[in-house]
Image 1 (cartoon, rainbow, N blue to C red):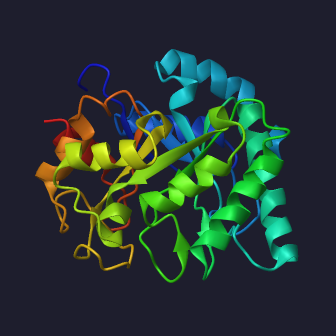
Image 2 (cartoon, helix red, strand yellow; image 1 turned 135 degrees about the vertical axis):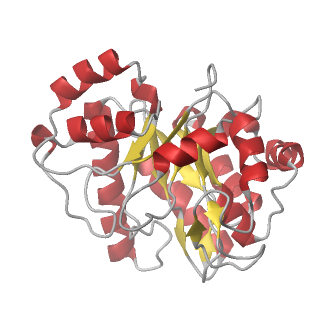
Length: 279
């Protein structure tokens, strides 16, 4: 792997090895960073924190050479901090509070979050920043990273303006960040061929200092489709050459970059995709 370039993938976490199993899976793919869910992505079920083998994981992580700050956690998909229903929004806040707590206990720095959904982007952004401010009262060092979204339905975060509005209203700027997803950017209508142009626009509207994590995915759909369908690297409409530019861009090399590409014949091909992206 090229010096200082961080490239990895989403790996599973299941009983009985939990975090140790996640680390071993990531290493088997040749990854030097990786992303996990601390429970089910599609529900709020999660194993007790004391079952995750945290002490053994931290020891094994040091031996592997992977930095704990390059282990990214992702929140469950079904949270919605922008929900107009206060009861449902409160429940999502409790889930986020628990995810932050779990990250602190594991030692992970970055927690990726799908911002939420609301028919009114302005209202949605206000609700999200309010929720994050409440959570951050107990948050010591976990950076909540708003993911760029594809724009399905009434998703918040499908443009840089949304992200800027949320971040501007977050009180503790040290505990907020952004996770860019190449597939989501493409599907939301952003032309990502010119990496410098996209990063300059992001810097002007949000600030490059907030970019903490990237998801590297090809897309099954044309630009602006607002569908969010990931494709394997080089098998979609974005293409290998463009994704290589993102992976190897000087401003992005030191950020954890995570593959979330589809399985092929029931198995991930992250090892092959990591290799071709770094060629």
